[in-house]
Amino acid sequence: MGNDNSKETVEKLLQSAKKEFIEKGYMKASLRNICKDAGVTTGALYFFFKDKDDLFRGVVGEPLRQLHGILQSHMLEEMEELKSYTPGMQVDLENDKAVAIKVIKLLFQYKEDFELVITGAQGSGLENVMDQVADQLNIHYSTVFCAMRGYTSKKQMTKEDKFIVHWMAHDQVDIFIHLLTHCKNEKEALRQFDALFGYIIGGWYGAIKSMKQF
Image (tube, rainbow, N blue to C red; front, side):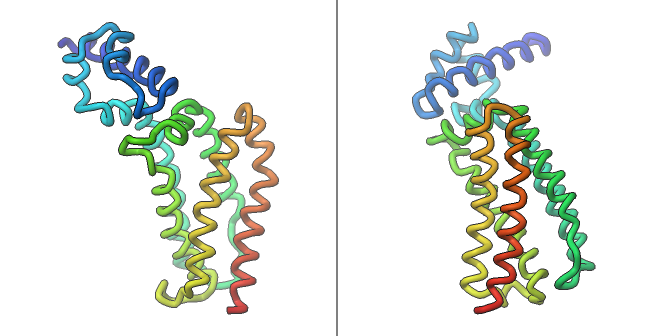
């Protein structure tokens, strides 16, 4: 196939697949229907995509890659900052808020794609991707938590420490999912996030303070 024709065929398949996945979810989506809607043969589909899962990743992969990039960049920045951090030191919360706003803008830029990942990915290789994001945050937040508590190693974390950090990591992911699924648009989500950011930061510092009793 020529490059132009190939690009056009892939675009048709992705558009048809997105429509089918949104309507029926991953498990009930039909490759036959996707090909029929795109006006291509099943052979053409398998020329560009290995299977149904690969096609699903083709639909939602770019938004997820961008989200991963934002989070990775922020975590690397924080790791650098931790090298010169001492317990009780003032933290730049504006940077945290700026990154959160960037995530919200991305979520609403690709609203249908992220909603599809959240509600329609069951059965695909991406069905647990949001839990994986939370697990990634949990690892990073454990490092941050240790620095703020003055621990020299994660081995010093108590069972209670690990419990609260794990909960906070998953809670933050749930907050962004809630904004995406309950706000009409980006503007409303950003307005609601002003209060939620206070909750996130207050909860984090409150946990650091209260955990000292153990």
